[in-house]
Image 1 (cartoon, rainbow, N blue to C red):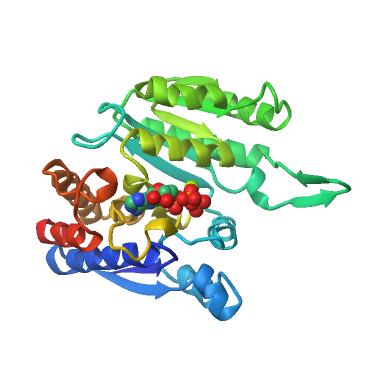
Image 2 (image 1 turned 45 degrees about the vertical axis):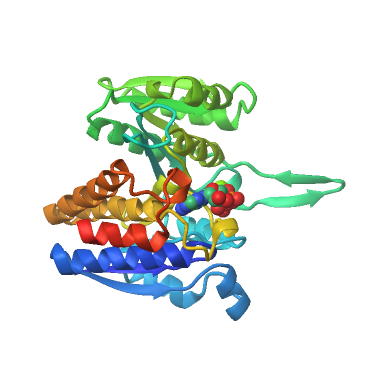
Length: 337
Ligand code: ATP
Ligand code: MG
């Protein structure tokens, strides 16, 4: 029995959470892998009700669980997810982008992952006013760069792809901060002679993701560049509605869609729950690895193939060219699991 904490979020968060619970319950019933789900609140609505975007009870409950699923939160995201990433030391943000048949993708041969440093860079909130200027401190440390670089090379080692790591930075302009990041990644690359290594400036990378995305395998980059490039890479393979993410530390992990609360489509029952359901897939893989539980890998594989088999036969939500509602799409998944 795995204890799962679930932050239900804002905007389309509650709709996605309902879909996730329904899929987890089906896995409980049909596939004999047991979950104990605790729903938790955090985000804009919670801030309004309680005065805190991330209440202590939520944090305590997450700490007692085996893994956390987090639906998107709105304006208060920086006070929820950015805080959780640092509090739980979830230093690696993993954002896969894989093309599948029958998706509105730019190409159908893309299989890459963005490994985004998750604890520092411009995300530490060290911003202030100085005279007539606004200043933000960009922190890049040797330690954090080293562990994310190692994580990227270890993931490249495990992939059955071309096994290449591309270090993305802008060291021609930010010579000290990105200079450090590039140097550390290059040093770490020497411990992995079987894995190809290259460096690319972030502007060139943004262009190449459109021009020749099949050239990428594992991209390792700093926090803000990773945020931007992963929205782009998700669009290259079919859009934010299909894009999951994992926030991984040495002892704990949190799984969430790449996208935000999407207030423009909230409450309409049209959101694509795949981003969150594929986050459950990433969670199952992580639980399988951590607990040496092959059942988790089996169910992860089954969940992913169920989603893509449905999409292949035209059972799709609006964002990827179909007409199914969130609840219709979810019940097709639970029927076919
Ligand atoms: P944030 O700053 O939190 O990242 P954002 O302003 O980038 O938020 P998102 O919420 O990430 O906006 O989404 C951008 C747009 O993509 C949404 O307005 C919505 O139209 C579309 N979108 C995002 N997620 C989904 C989904 N699961 N299903 C369908 N459309 C989606
Ligand atoms: Mg966004």
